[in-house]
Length: 218
Image (cartoon, rainbow, N blue to C red; front, side):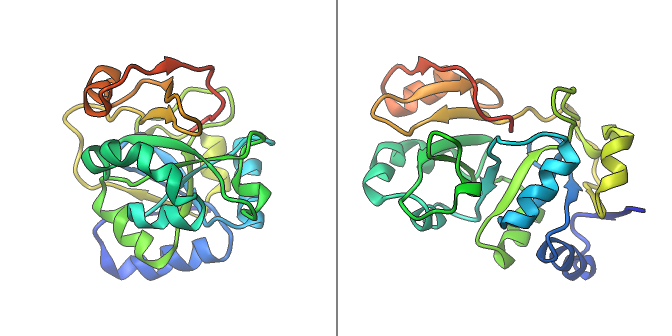
C-alpha cells in the first residue's frame, strides 16, 4: 500500500531516496504534470514498464544541471543547444540528444537518443542532489490521459507505486506538459509543443524548427 508524503518535508527525503535506490517507483507532483520517478538502472526501467504497461520506449532523464549532460552526450553536440539551455533550464523544456557511444541501451531510444530536462521544482532539484539523473515519465497507463497532478492518478497506478509525493500548495492553474525538441541532428525539430511556445523558442534560437513525429511518451 502506497504512502502519501509532501515535497518540502525534509525528514521524508531519506525515505524517498531509499525507495528509489531500491529500484522501486515513486509517483509525484512536479513543475509539469503528475509523474513517475525511478533511478536510471535497468531494473528500475523494467519496473516503470510494468507500472505503465508498456515496453520498448525510452524514458526522459531528469538531471540537476546542464553539466550532467556531459556524462551521456558529446560536448560538440551541446553547442547547438547552448542558447536554449541558458534561457529555458530549469524549466518545462525537454531536449532529445544523441547518446555517446557506450551509454547503456536501456537509457536510449532505438534511434540512439536520450531525452533530458532540468526541472524547475525545488523538491525534484533537491532529490537530484542524491542521483546523477532520474527516469521520469507521466503517471498514466500507456495510451491513457495524463494526470495534471497526483490527485488524478489512475487506481491501477496507485496500486503499483511505493510512494506518492504531493505538492502542498494547490496550483491556481494546471501545469502543462513540457515542450519537446529533438536536437539530435543539425536541424532542430518539434516533437511536442507544451509549456514553452515554439515561437518563443525559435526567437531564442533564431531559427525555424521543423515538425517531427513524436517518438517519446514523456
